[in-house]
Length: 190
Figure 1 (cartoon, rainbow, N blue to C red):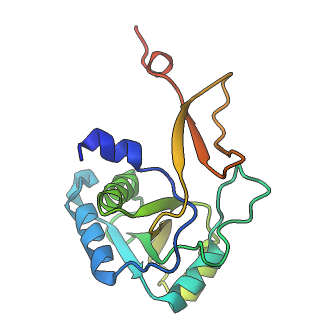
Figure 2 (cartoon, helix red, strand yellow):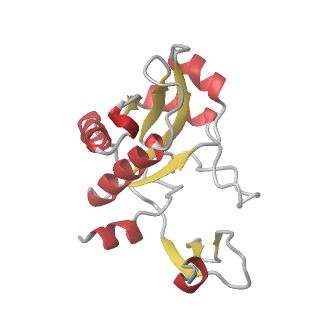
């Protein structure tokens, strides 16, 4: 699969086949991609908490918020929830701010997941103190993102933005539509 194909296929997945697990080894492989990715000043301040355990997943899930534009949808129902998570942390003893390192790492993880046939979703809308307590994360680590992972149980398609509306939506067949701005709108000819 080309890098373009991976990027197009790598959509935020919010419903998963909960009967199909993701192994801890797969999570380690995905974090290895993040480890090998760029880091500002090569400081590598990111740390990761991995969960492929249903009990730990059950502690993480209530700390997450899903699909802000789908206001009537409370998030994945039982049977559709992620079967794995990667929590991305910044080690403040190495660097006070992660800069954009966690975005680079998350994209590397999600592209690797896509290549493996998995779906994922970056979640920044978190109850961070509840998550810190649930996972016993020491204070020196800033919680940056949670990446939810699993085997996709939904179809996500890309659409062109119409009338300036960038809000994603679901149609009557439960297909998730993601509008993207066209090249002519985003490339400035100065």
